[in-house]
Each structure stands twice: as structure tokens, then as C-alpha cells.
Amino acid sequence: MPIRTHLQARSPFVSRRDCLAASLALGTAACLALPRRALASASAASCSPLLQHTLPRLQDDQPVSLCDFAGKVLLVVNTASFCGYTHQYEGLERLHGRLASKGLVILGFPSNDFGQQEPGTSAQIGQVCFNTYGVRFPMFSKIQVVGQGAHPLFHSLAQATGEKPGWNFHKYLVDRSGSPIASYPSRVAPESAALVRAIEKALAQRI
Image (tube, rainbow, N blue to C red; front, side, top):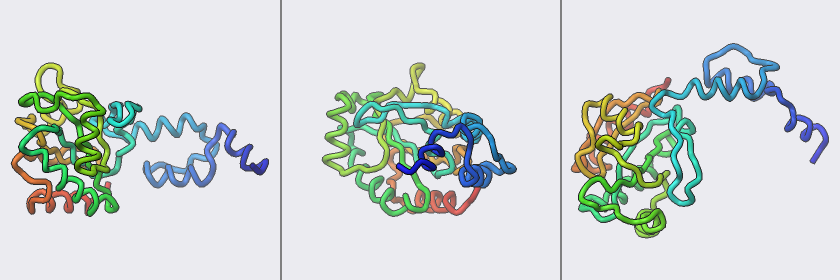
């Protein structure tokens, strides 16, 4: 590794390029000689309260911060492996394939809250969503989405939209600023005209 690159990697300060990128993303003035930890704090501050959660990834339990998806349009879905709506994984994956490049991120959260239709381990859930349905969008470990033990993410989504999940594959649409803008019950298919229009409208809007 060249000496200059090595020294840059060890520098506690932000480079001009990093600073410009941060300024454009956060709408701030130039930040030359700003410590990297300060830049990280600024980036975290740009993440909406809704996304300030870290959850384990389904495939390996590695922690993922939802702030990693700040600035994206999100479709948050509670999933299950043995439900009449489980086939919606197919539509969700097609939607992911069509619109991910435009800024859509689908987030799947397995839950056993409805009909005991997600009783398995992470490995068993992964077998269904990854191997059977070929899911490539982010999936997280099993959580509770309703009731007193509901994860704060779903509690916030229900409060903001006035609708909590009534069954598996309930869908919440979140705009680029991290604000919930719509709620769709299980019967609304991922590729339904109304949902796709709402997603495309949200994708067209900039922060």
C-alpha cells in the first residue's frame, strides 16, 4: 500500500472529498479538518427517529442499523413462511428488482404474531424466503409487531399511520425523509396499481 494512502487511512480528519459528500448530503457548509467522529455524529443526526434502530440480519444475526437506509423510500413488511399470503414474497422480490435502482428498499420482518405461521428458526425462515422465493432484499430476524411487546419500529409505524398490522404481509410505505406516508393491509398485493403508484410518487420526491 502506498505511504500516502496508508497515512490517509489513519488520519482522524475528514478528507475534502468526504467533506463535500457530507455537505451535499446533509445540507451543511464545508467541514474541512472536522474529526471523523463528528462527521459520523452528523450523519446519524440526519437519520429520522423512525430509523434509529439496530436489528439482527436474518442470515447471520449481524447487527444492521436502519439508518443505513436513510434517504431511501422504504416498504416495511411483516412476513411469515406458512401464510396464505406467503406467495407475496414473489411480488415483493419483483418490485425490488424493478425499483431498487431508483431508491426503493424493501425491509422484511418475520413475525409469529398471526396464526403461529412463522414458528421456525432463522435458518428455517431463511430456507423459505431465500431458497424457495429467491428473496434478495434485506430480511431481519423474527420480531413481534403487535401487542405490548411490539418492536418500537412497528409501534411507531402504527402510531404514525393509525393502522397496526392485522395479519402477515402488512405493508408500510416510508418516504425519503423517514416519515411513514401510507399503510396497506395484507390483501393489497405488492404489485397492485395503487401501491406501485404510491411508491413511484415517493421515489420522485427528493429530500
